[in-house]
Image 1 (cartoon, rainbow, N blue to C red):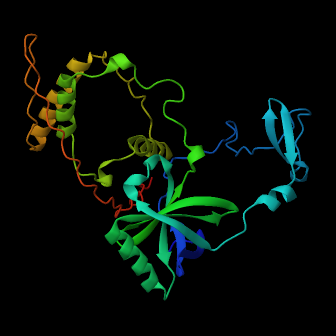
Image 2 (image 1 turned 30 degrees about the horizontal axis):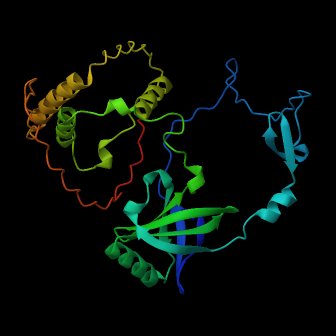
Image 3 (image 1 turned 90 degrees about the vertical axis):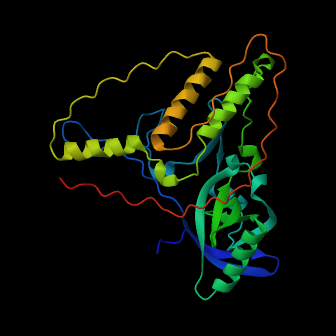
Amino acid sequence: MPNAIWTGSISFGLVTVPVRMISATRSLDVRFHQLEESTGARIRRKWVSDQTGEEVANDQIVKGYEFEPGKYVVVDAEEIAGLKPKASRQIEIEDFVDLSDIDPVFFEQPYYLVPEKDNAKAYRLLSDVMEEESKVAVGRFVLRSKEALVAIRSVDGVLVLEMMRFADEVLAADREQPLAEPASEPSEREKEMARQLVTSLTATFDPDKYHDEYREELLALIDKKAAGEEIVATPEAEEPAKVLDLMAALEASLERAGAKQAKSGRAPAKKAAAGSAGASKTTKRAPAKKAAAKKASSKKVASKRTRKSA
């Protein structure tokens, strides 16, 4: 059983559900250490003063906030401690909302909430009702001396807690410049071809289908070097093809998607009828009904990579 990051309870009304919080993900990034080239020894980082160039002892380091370039306000540890929220062992649920009401940009990090021993009934009650009502619980609690905003959802009987960003932490997408110019409105013909392309590429989400190819190739390289194999430089990547105009790009994409579907045995999407300069009115397609949102369930956890021995 994984170690619990936090233990406490979920509280809604007068009902409490004792739980333990464990990580729902793991990082598989390939990490390197810095070594001295001539000896292979690890290199350690030191805290050095910008003014004297000498190393500074830990008991001489204080916290400072830069309010203007080169100007700092020093804040004592006692002052910070006085402002920290009181430690709590409860996730206070404030609202139950629809999952579709929460933009995924607010989600930050998932965790599993597992029931404490002999308290499975209250856990099952909350999980079942939330799943049946298609609701997500939004609340907050204190983790590592910081108040955290969270969303809790039920996935196949398991409560999944999503750490969330507060509203003022999310930046507007168009804060630098407008996303599109008024004159860039796509034509109905372009929209029709784009719809067909989206339809031809529509599939059921399967997380096992997607791999971090760079990480896999990097680990394979490390295995070969560890085994003493000689590494031959790979050829340089080809230059990207010239950007076609939008209509030509859509047509080429539809042809490639059709060939891919034919190879896989799927029925290719019908190609849009070619428009003519003298055509009369273009009949608009009735907008497709929005598909009912499927519950996302991450049942499978990426299996641990077994590296071949040298």
